[in-house]
Amino acid sequence: MPRSRSVDFRFLAAVAAFPCLQQPGEVTPNLPVQPGVWTTAGELALLPTSGPAWNALLDAANAPLGAPKLRSIGDQTEIGVMARALVYARTGSTQCRDEVIAMCEKVIGTEREGLVLGPARNLAAYVIAADLVDLPPPLKGQFGRWLREILDEELDGRTLRTTHEERPNNWGTHSGGTRAAVARYLGDDEELARVARVFKGWLGDREAYSQFVFGALWWQSDPLAPVGINPAGATIGGFPVDGVLPDDQRRAGPFVWPPPQENYVYEALQGALLQAVVLHRAGYDVFEWEDEALLRAFTWLHVQANFPAEGDDTGLPHILNYYYGTTFPAPIPSQPAKNIGFTDWTHS
Figure 1 (tube, rainbow, N blue to C red):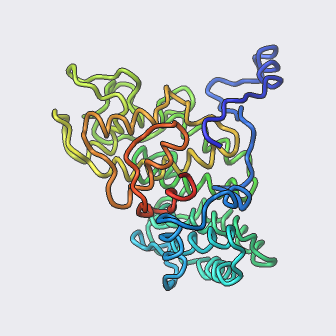
Figure 2: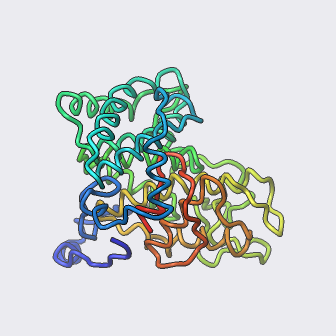
Figure 3: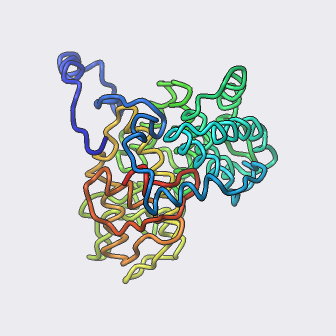
């Protein structure tokens, strides 16, 4: 549900009465928990089965599926799998469910001998799809065991966990989004709490987490305290950089004004919004964190950089508008991103 602000006051009262319950930098959920990794059949039942967004979803669900290749950073087989899962959850199509089940079995092991960015970009959609169709045993057990293992599987010297906790750019946000989806699917609250803490640190709360390894600091408003998103009111040389993602904006080069329109910023926001939605459903008030950092990031792109979302980023504004009540340009139909798609229907 968008913009829920209800709080477990009994928990907050306990923390206030016993400060030792809350450790410095600790991040805890304070919203009602919603079922589902990304959405549920109950929520989808309220959505229309007509119109351009639905038609685009159906087209994707009916398009031929290739063989899954998690190792390939450009593979988007997962989008067709997610489309089938959404259509099944809305209509009960057994064909769509059967195809999702088959692909969830085939995808196991296809990450091997690739870069960690492959599963970082591709895996979460399979997890969301598996959650929506409820995999049958024994595949459900096999799939779950593989998910537990893949978080620590070394791929070209990195794992999803280490990439999330070290890289403050799009590699890290995609890894964090996939890590969050896996943790929520497995019901691993401890793992999800770690994801939340790292994500809050990336948004700017260095007390929560600050162990990232940053690249050039050209776009950091405070180079001595670098963050994933510059804080509210931040400036460089008098120019507003409030909301900039410095470790992806740097891909455009040293600080200049007017600012370059750097697409890697949107790439990072794809993974960031995946983390945000999964964590929000688990009870974390992420859309409020660090002075609404995600909203500030989009606002900077639209106002200062004059850079609305294009191509496979056009599904992102639908998420922002859904949770913040904003009116960022949000095309219908939108183009799926890495890992997630069809937000013009699910988050209309």
